Amino acid sequence: MILSKYPYVVQKEILDHMKYSELFLLSFASKNMKKLIKSSQMNRFQSVSLIKYTCDHRGEPWVHVHYGNNSERIMIIAKHKEDKYGYFQLKVSGKIIDFRSHPRKYRNIRLRSIENSYYPYSVASYPPSEKETVVQSIHNYFLGFFGNSMEYQWEAKYLSDESFYIPFIPQLQNVSFHIMIQMDQNFAYMENLDNLFSLSPVLKSIKLSTASTEPINPESKFYQAESIEIKQLFYASPVSFHHFKGRQLSITGVGIREDLIEFVNRWKSGEAFQKLEYLKFKVFMINPLHNGILNEIGAKYIDELKQPPAHTLPKVYHWYNERPKTKPIISHTYVVRETDNRVASILIGERTLYFGVWNETEEEFLEMVK
Image (cartoon, rainbow, N blue to C red; front, side, top):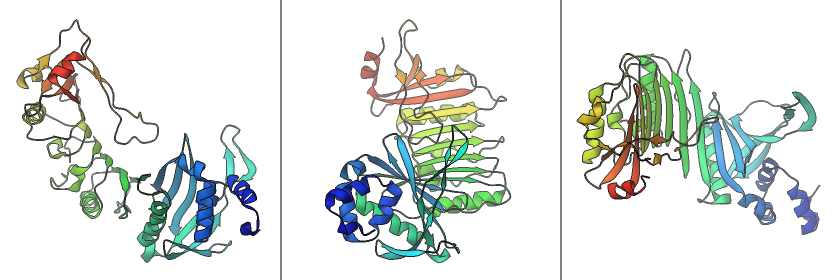
C-alpha cells in the first residue's frame, strides 16, 4: 500500500488507527512522512507526557511512550543478530540504522491466555562498537520530534550476583537518569561503582542496596544526585549523609546519635544541606534513637493541644509500585535555620528520624498550626 496515493482524509484515517510504535517507525521513512504524521496526529502527540527508556539486565534499552494513564513500548535497541525476518535500513538523525520487526503475541492477563492478535514493535540494531551512537541518534530524533519541553527519563536496574559490570548509561541531552543497584560486599563492585558515577552524567535518583563496607568516595558524583535511597545490609555503611548535596535522602543502616546531632546543627547554621527537602534515617535495632537528641539540637515545640501541619512532597522519582509522595511528617517539634529563618519539622521515633524542610519561615509556619 502506498499511503501517499490516498487523499489526506483517508491518510489520516489510516494513521489514526496505527499504534505509536507503527507511527514512529513510519515517520523514519522520509521527511514528508514525518511531517504528515506530525500534522495529522497532532492531538495524539499532545497527550504524550513522557519518553522513557528502561534498560534491561543486558544493558539494552526499551523505549516507551507514556500518554494519559497509559504507556506503549515502541522500540527495543538491541545488539545486531541474525534474524529470520531480515533487516531493513532507515536513516534516523542522519545515521543509517538496521531495523527488524518483532511481532509479539498479546497476553490477556485477566484470562491468562494468548490471543490471536499481535502487538508489534521494532528493534533498532547496533554493532557492538556503535551502541551509544545508535541510542544517541534515536534520542536526537525524539528531541527533534517533541522538542526540549518533553520529559525524557532513563531507568536502569542492575542486580549483581557473581559479577558486577559498569551499567550502560549514555550521554544524552535533556534526560534524567534513574538507577537501582543491588550488590554484595565484594570490594571490586565498589570500584566499578565509583567508575560508573565518574563516567556517567549526574544521576537524578539512585536506589542502592548493598552489603559492602567499603566507603564511596566523598567527592563522587554519587552525592550530587537529587535523590538517594540506600539500604545497608550490614553494620558499616559505605554512604555518609554528611556529603549529600541533593534534595531527598533515605538511609536504612547504622548511625550514631552524634552523627544526627551534627547533621541537624550543620543544617541549622546554613553550613550544609541547602537543597535538602526530606531526610529519613532508620537505624538498626542495636542502636535505637531517643528524644534526648532534641535538647541538644535546640528544638522548638508546638503546643500539644494544637494540630501541626503535615509535611509531605512528591518524590523526585518513584519506582513501580512505590508511593509517589514522601510519608507525611506530623510533629510538634521543629528547628529553624539561622540564615533564612526556614523551618524543618523533625520527628524522632525509637529507630527512625524524619526531617522535612518547609518553604515557609517560622512565622509563616506557625500560621499553619491549627
